Length: 255
Length: 255
DNA sequence: GCAAAAGTGTTAGAAGTACACCCATGA
DNA sequence: TCATGGGTGTACTTCTAACACTTTTGC
Image (cartoon, rainbow over all chains, first blue to last red):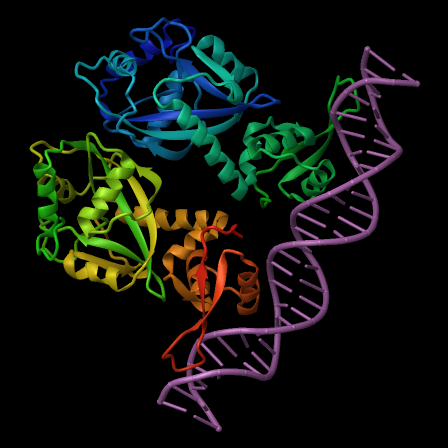
């Protein structure tokens, strides 16, 4: 179904274009910024930009992203691309900005890489990319992406130089999430497992909003949120007082 | 400098492409949603889609927008396009969303129009457009656009069917402004003249947020906003008690 | 003097902020 | 018993919402 455990995963991905008889639109791409929370900090999923022309094969990373097909909606393209790079399906992605600087391909190695990756026979001058973002928790399944695909979760705080203008894209994705979370904090529950402790939720909020939150006031607020239900279940196997679990119920009114 | 008082304004605009020796990118466009306040309601600026193939010459309107040039940033393209369609310069536009449905050109008349407008010799299948929005007051100068250019300010509430998916784009622009104004209400001052009355500001807020605001509470809030300064000057020539003018001071902290 | 819009204060409840100590658990 | 993180209450401030009458002006 999709390329698993393949050392040259993304070349195989490119071949899908041809196998599917799809014409690519050589001017428009989508890129996906997957933000994941590992319990401590925000991470971003990057994939190996393999066989990048002119440089060694180590340390070149980029966002999962690719040119769109001619007969494909942007949202569909984002889903497809993410699936090709990670095997994930039905990830809820939000479009947040188009990046169209005329000099996005200023590194010639990036152009060469693109042309090879997509088996194009003409020079690419310029690509406008539509960037999507998504929030998810890094669980065992997500961690597995690092084996089956040439992907890596990297902490936002230690992100190396990525290909193209992908560092800018990541920075704006985070800012966009920050803004959206002010209007609708229920977004943030996507970063957590189904059952989570108050401390985990607080850590997520502190991370995204870049602030520290008073513990007592936080509990008060938690109690007033009708969309969060306390469970009887508690943590297990911790070497201190066990924390209560909560769950998020989408149906209830936000706040 | 720019095409003024020209009955075929937009054909002349297209010729600029050639005159400037610019290659257009046939896959990516920008569209501008100018939202203007006339003292009563929100209006949107539309331009005549002249000589649209297959139909009469009346009643075909679209947003000011056009394909981008190969060596031009998106933000620059938005500025250029707006200038070509309206003569306006240095309008502060915000990118808000890319529209890339594969069926955006489903009306064949729209494709034909595009190819003619840009003097292209091949068929256009698909365009992704990057949409921008801007807020401004409709003063005498803005009203003049309706003469010099084939442009019209139309009330949002009475907007006819526009070309392409431009009605969707307008609707999402308004929603985007609504959201942004919650986070930063100083945006809304762009809809007002330099000097404005409390009632004008209130009307704008009510319009954008789709609510009604209590007059007394509004005055209290106004007094607490450090970015709004009351002036000594008052209205003149009104047939009732003259209202005090206020001005907005960007430098001060928002509220 | 009247029509038309401007402007003005108080109160009650809700929400947010600041702050320090005891509790449960495993090692 | 101690180290670790979990959990709790109160007082104060700020914001919000509801509500009705007087003032100024031109005609």
